[in-house]
Image (cartoon, rainbow, N blue to C red):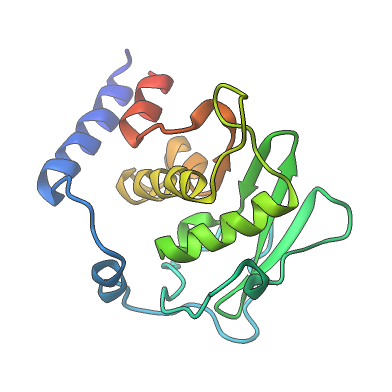
Length: 183
């Protein structure tokens, strides 16, 4: 294992110890968001890697998958609206990739967004006996967000964690599992 990999694992472990490993409620995480980056004109481009951006305000009134207005013209490239921002998602066989997913932090909203995605194209579970639930998909999304928050800026791993990639092989994996898979 290279020294760089040791540094990343050590940094993650150290951050977890300092920050604690307990689950944070949606209301607690909402209080920590200091700015809202989106306005009615906000569009987050598919290829864009926003500089100096923080999570979209997690104060939301999503009540159903219809609230995000999921749309696709080709069945592979999708757009949805969340808190007046346009986000992109890509579907390939048994896989959803949510672009700039780190910007959405409200778990109940993640579940509703995942429900809309699953309604459009369900993703198999890890043993291919059925399909993943929106809650399970949102858990994987949260793990990407945790990794994104913990990893040092400018690293390949942080760039990879920026977009949630939801597929059968990663069902139920924690941030720790993702790191072990890459080492």
